[in-house]
Length: 380
Image 1: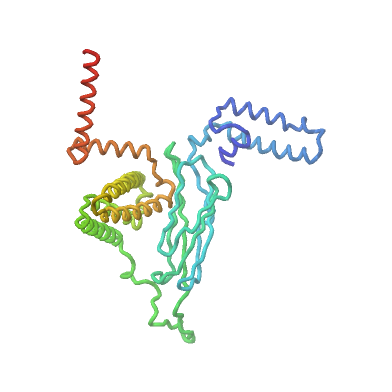
Image 2 (image 1 turned 120 degrees about the horizontal axis):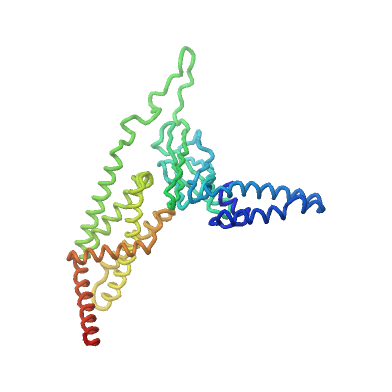
């Protein structure tokens, strides 16, 4: 029984103080006391005794306010902690279930890697009750050609309470054992089984991905996005095509090859979430801008370039929506993001970046003239 469940049983809010908790306990304990139920039927007395035990258990947790979720960190209970997928034929898929629960204090963020390995993915996450936890996570393993022998990976699961800066993380070990495509020769007379010389038992060291490979893929992805944006910018003559395509390729590379860095290190995760939030906000503005330009240019000019850019923006927006939907902690908080974007725009305007500088001058002239008219009207 955790703190929140004890509050529900006793019938007090999670913010109740010691006096409220004691008063509610005395009230319920008196109602369920054996002296009050002695003349009732046996079934009712038995049920009252069970409820009184739950009331006492809840009070023992709540009477010590140090157990409040304000101070107690969340605590993960994950079962099982090891899963093995055995004898999967090439292309075959197998599934397994993991249950996740919290027996500690409250939490503000839940996260689980949805693709911890190329051969493993999270197929479904569903709640077994009306509360956020406990959850059932359905895993799906696929025997792909790049997995030649017994292979393991870690599935990190995280609970975090941003209010008191506490967290709990558990890693589930998952193993896959693909079925042998070329079994050993059935000869075991004078010694060990003779191995098929044409079969590779496991991937050679040269076939395994080096630590620098994700960074090389990231660099190539961003370079490809930069070149594509440069070509589109020159053809369409729309200036923001270059940062649009380059930024989208950078976000794709981070989400594809460096997702764990954004969860393992809190500062990187906060910066990545900020980038995603600003990207969503900027994309909404660019989609509106492209739509306005299409309507304005459709009257007398060719607007095919803006139609193409609008399609590209919508595709990127759908991809960003998918990235945000995979983990709830990434979902944007638009109010702080809007104000941050506003401060960035003001800074760029005062730095002389066009067209923001021109808008800044117009706004300054408007307020200057308004101030002068107010002074003249007051006769100061």
